Image (tube, rainbow, N blue to C red; front, top):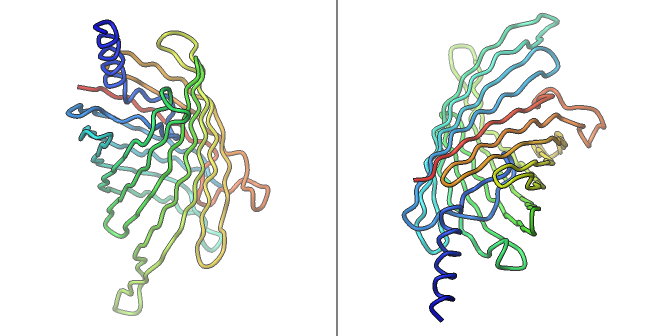
Length: 266
């Protein structure tokens, strides 16, 4: 009986201390922090090349805290900047932009990827920017069998924003809405005790003005390293195709996304 209690405590402690070990950069897993645990994550995403020169960096600083009862919340500070060449009236313009935003997420774990037949969680996030608000809901499914971990995310985003235009001596504010439906799948294989090789697929779909604007499919490889209280992930995701036109979509999407995330649990 005592041995069973000791084993149970050890398993519980292992799950709690390793709860947020993350193997993918785009695909979420169902695990959450234990009550009172805190985690600091730093994200950097680089986006390269559209129809002409384009490069963007997006930085995200995330603070997560476990609330108990398989629930966690997180707060994000986001900053991004880009530079690219755009063409208007057959004239090229060099355009530089920057943006700031705040986000808050809530994640509830429903089942465990090792103890149960399948791991699952539900996720909600809202993002506030100066000119827009974004709401996102996500279903997370994952499963770990031996050295192989798989995860699938189905998410929907609703975005409403203000577009500004000049009308003589007045500025006109136009309300616009966007709906995004996204699918993400990740497969990771444990190469060593602390190293994983990962593969990810993503499908990003935009519905606006009563039509589907694009359905962009991307795929790539990643590496993950984790140890007690710390992990780091790196991935490269080139765009494969726009499934609506069978060509790449390079007006609003890039040829290549590279993402680095590292984290410390305390």
